[in-house]
Image 1 (tube, one colour):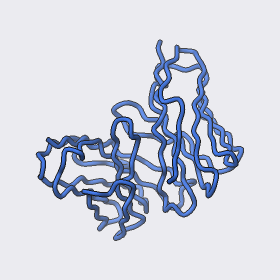
Image 2 (cartoon, chains in turn brown, red):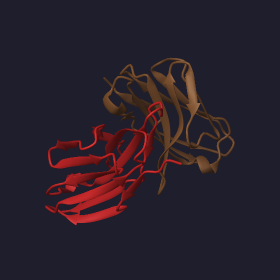
Image 3 (tube, each protein chain N blue to C red):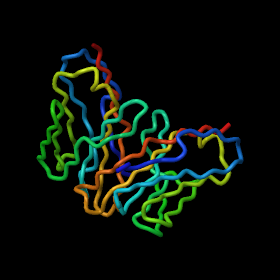
Image 4 (cartoon, chains in turn purple, yellow):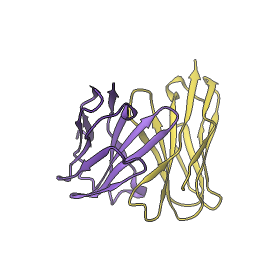
Amino acid sequence: NAGVTQTPKFRVLKTGQSMTLLCAQDMNHEYMYWYRQDPGMGLRLIHYSVGEGTTAKGEVPDGYNVSRLKKQNFLLGLESAAPSQTSVYFCASSSLAGEGNEQFFGPGTRLTVL
Amino acid sequence: ILNVEQSPQSLHVQEGDSTNFTCSFPSSNFYALHWYRWETAKSPEALFVMTLNGDEKKKGRISATLNTKEGYSYLYIKGSQPEDSATYLCAFLYGGSQGNLIFGKGTKLSVKP
């Protein structure tokens, strides 16, 4: 099992460009999450999904959109990138059946917006 | 606004020292408390998931306790080793949260050989 994978690992964008980050998990987890990690801020939830076809806003959703068309994939889109979106993005997944909802994290995507 | 506080923010110890960190969380509507270990350039990995008041969990030299009535958890590391150097995150899961964790900002531990 690969667990949680993220594509790409690194990306540099210019202000105004768009891109999509892909998260995939092979553990048949119902829940999936996108976080961003900034120095001194910890992990902040951007959007999450409790099942295929459903998405919801987290703590910092502005400037991002998400889609969960297949249970194993959770896409994070930036329609018009801004320098404030320079960050490291982590995807995670968890099982409805797991004790206390332990989350499994991907390796992260480092995004720089110039 | 739900808040999870961790202290200290950072800690520098010598190899062989024992150490502990604190996580404070809301004492109402508790569902679970998570501890994650996050090494530099890697992704967070779960150490413990604790759900019951009075829980004590242990993994090798690392252990954790939970007090849900007063809203705190302690993480202990006995005989720290350089490979224990990492950021330790705690996260609070409340009832009805749809699985969303509220993360603290972490305690960064550096263990000098």
